[in-house]
Image (cartoon, rainbow, N blue to C red; front, top):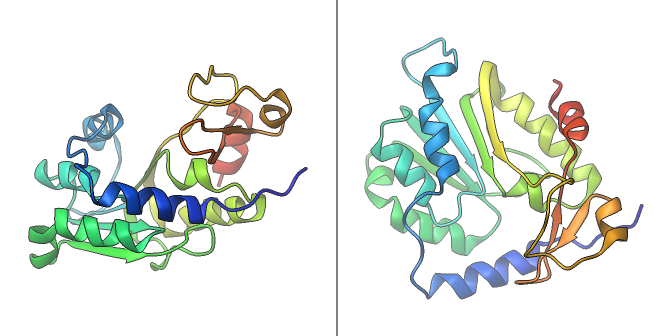
Length: 202
């Protein structure tokens, strides 16, 4: 197994470039799907907490807040720029004390107590862009730790069996479970169903 360099610096550059441009404010279809599945999750209190891994500039949390998905929200991102921009996007919710935004590397730690969140979601963020195997296992362990019993982990990740129009063709890399994006040469982790079942089994 090859050793791959972290994507952290590339994310810093990408967010820095994006910060001065018009940023998308509408959520993608996955967030709308998460909203539609809310009532399928058993919660033990009317007061619920939601965590977004890789909150970016805050558009997903903004959508969920506007639709009263949860009582309290947290967002974690790898870059200072993302936390600054999401703080701007969510300024009213931050002032009202219903949002907490943190800078952090979830491949090392998710800085919240055990059994804290009813919902955690990751839309093509850490689940895809953590390329170190040890950090990835730590990430999934942390997800399990911070979720309440019966809580839900929603995610979107690329399937290894998929077709990747936006990635360089590299069969050797794909065999190891990775693709390289054309847009910025960042590595993405792609998964088989069996791999995800193993990682999520706890």
